[in-house]
Length: 304
Ligand code: NAP
Image (cartoon, rainbow, N blue to C red):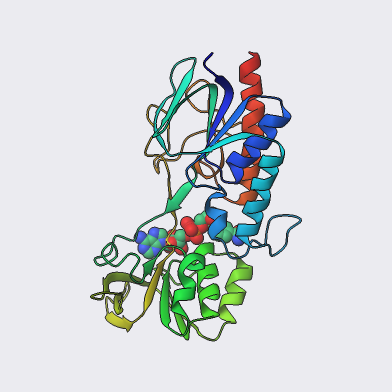
């Protein structure tokens, strides 16, 4: 007979993995669908996580691995397949991957978000040839080189500090003269001698033939243009939701799924958890909380 899961969770970052653990604890038939072979989401690319209680300073990959092992210990069913389509409106939801079709009474969307592009000329052409969106993934290629990080948030500042350990010089290029990153990160940044902040400035072009050789930087106040000689450009200007597949669900102006703390969306039986949800604070702690809340809402829905 065709299997119909109580809950299908799409996305195996901290929110999805927590939902899988809570789903199994609630004795729901639970399927976790993940794009990558091991799950973990964005934390896999985080060098150091310093605000997840109980694990000060843990490497993101290690924390992701711990979450994943916990899911396995709970014996949640999981597959590594890319979702191609979803039919979420009916009583029975249908999730189609390249390989299979899965059916569930409820679905938790936990697909997170991805780094935003800058949109500067040269960025796309030189992606992977000096332009990167992940300092922890690619930083090692820039040992003893000169790099720039663009952005003023937690990620940009963390990336600059991380890169400064191996690079001779790191520019932090920010469009304002004030950072939005946590104060503790700012202190660490300002105490790192080989980081130079380039304030009130935007990158208008990334140049290079086979690989990045420089960036044109414009001061937004004076309009003055400067060319910085660089080996690498790390773009850290925020994220956008992984929501290509979302249709017919109420989303906010940035494309994040509208749902409250209970993770209930505008479509019956569909829940949103983690970074894909419209919310104030996107952290591992808040993603994990969503995973637990989403399963509680799934239980309420199934009992109705
Ligand atoms: P973010 O906090 O949204 O910061 C994005 C930065 O990029 C901002 O400084 C923004 O400038 C700048 N920016 C945006 N669009 C730009 C553009 N087109 N050109 C130039 N600059 C642009 O994003 P994030 O740093 O990726 O962090 C994402 C979320 O993860 C945040 O909620 C963050 O707190 C969280 N996070 C937390 C930790 C931690 O707690 N350890 C670590 C990493 C990430 P403005 O400031 O002028 O808007």
